[in-house]
Length: 290
Image (cartoon, rainbow, N blue to C red; front, side):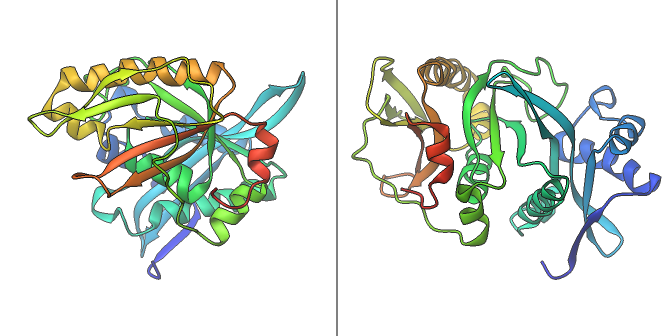
């Protein structure tokens, strides 16, 4: 990481490079690329575009702009993080993490304390990054949010998303970014869904329960929806629709997705979300995992 510099993207040439990276990372068609003129307009209105550079070569970027939410009938400003991208050959080097930390620093300097974005809850690597490393929380599920997004990664499935909240001043987030602890995982917690691995080695739901009332619940999910989609599109679609029902139902009942766990104790690794029913403020004040 010593050779990678995170800095604001300021030149038109580099903004055009962000257009090119959108195609390389997501496989966007031209129609779906966020164009340079829109990026420039939002930057002039308080937006933020940070690039990860190796020498003069851009290998990733993070882009967002100001927005607002209505909380307890009060208008609250926030930062909407629209895109975070790292070229495939540079992933797993900590580049994305450094981009998000710099984004946090810049947004804090604007006097804001909330960054929001969306991601596919069935993408295990992204879930680990967002929940475990950054400390986001989620209590909002968006079914088929983007419709046909015209890219390679999402083709074949509805674009369901978690809408996550990154409370960047909170003790929870500060503890995560300053000293990363390994989360404690307990299979003793009640499971919402019962799963099994079929003869092809693919995970599927046997049943799920929408009537659980315990304060902490686990929801098992496939580790990589992309790989599952390639192996069995029908099974991947079933996971999408079943987890849509589970998360939407429990969020409506006041649960918050607070952690993402992976367990290597099984014949093959398994992944779980932790849902907790407690006040959001209490969760954000908690510095330790559990």
